[in-house]
Amino acid sequence: MRNRKIIVKTAQIEELDLNQVRRLIGEERYQEIKVGDSHPFFVELLVAHEGISQGKIVGAGLNRPVKKLWEKARVDELVKRLKESPVPIYLFHSADSISRKEVGKILTAYARKVAGRWSALALAYISDPAVRQMIREKELDTCSLEAELIFEQSDEKKGLVEWVVRAIERVSGLALGSRRLSKPGFAGASILATAEEFEDDLRVRDYELALKEKEDEIRRLQKELAQYQKEQELKEQRKKVVEVVEGYLKDKSLKEEEKRLILESVAEKLELKRPEKEKLSELAIKETDKELEKLSQLRRLYQSPIPSPLEVEDEIPQNPLIPRD
Image 1: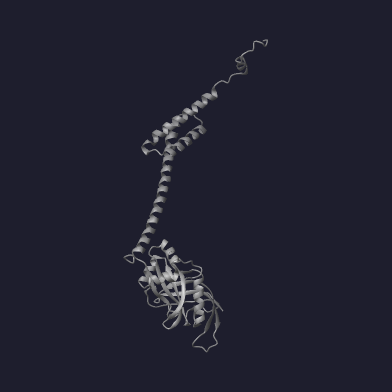
Image 2 (image 1 turned 90 degrees about the vertical axis):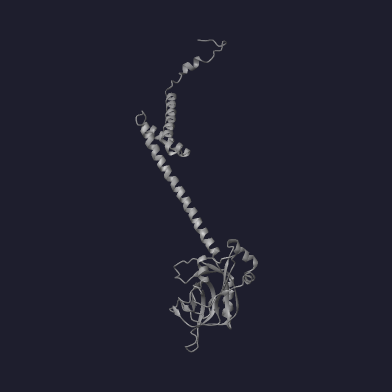
């Protein structure tokens, strides 16, 4: 039998040795994280343990908590799956159709005895500032595995185990939660410990990140506002130029096409110059006069008489050796 999710939960939070974190994930990976986050935040999660869990099996008409047996070999297999690739961490479970924001990821996993039971533990990096604070304040204290599992129905008499976990095909995520809001599946599943690197106040880094996000948002809005204001100013300027130029050309003996060409030329030149408002009308008239002078020159050239062929021929010097008519 296949399943999509299994739910795991809860225990107390202690401090995790930062040097231990560095040994587990390696110095190179630790420094890679520090490039983007100078004060990283890590948690140790007890994901599952040998014995019986009571999380939900989703699918096959069994969308309810059931008793499942996890053998030691399955705990080891889970550790292997958790180490294969970075597993995303989310805040609470959600419907498959609803996308969730990733708040961290599992960096490595290992197995050891916790409270006398063979357990799968994961070391995770939490990137979201708000989730970090919720963990510090113990609003979040559980974790729930989301995985594709293969189950076999138990042949034991009812009362102990209904299903046995036979294989773990894939781990798709881990959801952080609160034991106050949901009943534990694995009795010991929890956020075991935290480790973070701060100089003074634990909240300083999160405040800095939040402030940087606000500053980036303000800069973006300021840029958009400046662009909007520029566009509005250009619209107002063009409107004023049209008003001034059309009024100035109103009594001129010009064709409508000539007026339109003059207006477009003046507006384009003034958009490039971006004059002060109080000088706009004066400059618009000056530029219009220049365009009128150009138009007048073109008319004079067009109206100048073209020499006839005979007049041109008379101007050619005559060769004395060639008899003339």
